[in-house]
Every structure is written in C-alpha cells, then in structure tokens.
Length: 260
Image (cartoon, rainbow, N blue to C red; front, side):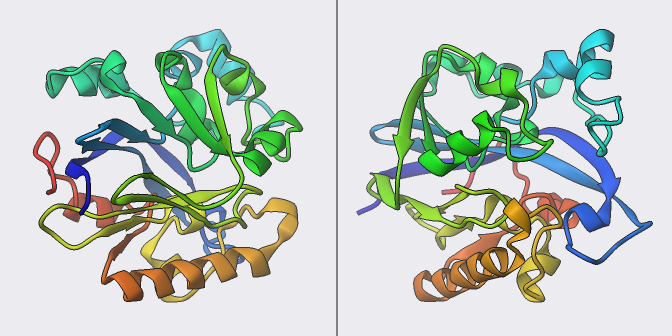
C-alpha cells in the first residue's frame, strides 16, 4: 500500500526561451514561456521534494544575474522568479518550512532544478551518481558549479529504487547523464509519473521528440527514455506529466490545494 498522502505541484518561476531547447530540431524562432516546477510529496514517513527550482539570489541580484545568466557563455537568458515564488515562501502557505522537508530528490542538477538546494542544506539530497559526476565536470552550460558546491547531505544512487512504498525513482537518461523520473502512487487517484526533463512538453511525449539539449548529443538515448516512460505509464495506468509545458501546467495546478 502506498505511503503517499498528498501531492502538490509548485510553480517556482518561469523561463522564456526558444522552443528548440525543448524539442530537438524543432521550434527555431518560436519562443515559449516554460514553468519551472517543484513537486512536494507528503508520505507517512516524511516529505519528499522533487526538484527545487532556481537559486533566487542568482536572479534577484544584478551582479549575480549578469555573471550566471547574462553572458555569452549562457545562451538561454535569465529565468523569471519573484520573492513569493521561493520555495520557503510556498511552503509557508502550507504551514511548513524547509526544515519540514526530509528528502530532496533531484531529477538532475541543471540550474533550474538544483539551484534551490541552498534552501535545503539540512535535507538528504538524492541524485544519481552519473548526474553528480556530470555536474562536477560540468557536462554542459546548464550546470552551475556553485549550486552543488554546498555542504549537502548527498545520498548518491546508482539505479532505480523505492524512496518509500509508493514513490519510485526511475532512470531516464538522455537529457542528462543521470536523469531520473519518479512514479508516485496516490492514495485515491491514478498514479502520476513525473517525467522531469526527459519530456519538457506534451509534444515530446506524443511525438517522441528528444529534448533540445541531450547529454553528449545522445538523442537515441533520450528517445528511448521517453518510450520507457510511456510504457511505464501504460503498465501502471499512470498520468505521464511533462515538466515545462505551460498549457499542461495550467490544467494541473491546484496549489495550495493538493492531489490525493
């Protein structure tokens, strides 16, 4: 029986960029506004946070924003994030604080998924071994060394596993070396399979299009992960959620209400 009791999708910011960053070989000259999301999972054994968004200070501080985002080495442009969208402030709406989060699960360590780790230095941080290695290299320009150079309680993983009964980590590499998705069994509704950046948009899922940014240009690996997630969603009758799709998010955003 699942240990999950409640589930919240949380908007932590947005990012406007050329669509080809989400759909490999498609969307040049077309710009989209992508939600930057975290997901809070409450279980009988504690709380799990799937991804943590950006580091607010790197966006709000002019000098830091210029250093990290507004330069030729970073081609994607800065995200948008308000003080109210910081995860501690979102948690406060639920009567919680960062200290109430027991585990942070990083799908991968790009800036818009791991930047907020600075708010959760007390928690156990789960990440795939290959992903941590890729961030430390770094394997591409979307990794910021300072996001992971923190006194964190790393719990480095090497395969698929259950965090608790009803919450399973799924290997889905391709976008990055150690990308992980998550299957969540709700107490009442259908399971939810969080694709993470294995599938930014519904288009990635429906048409099996790789993300624009693929680890070592391994497009075949990325498409294989999409197909794997689709097969899992069929086997478990799970809803497969893309991660940066504004239209999808607007239909699936009950915050501060929750799924169960």
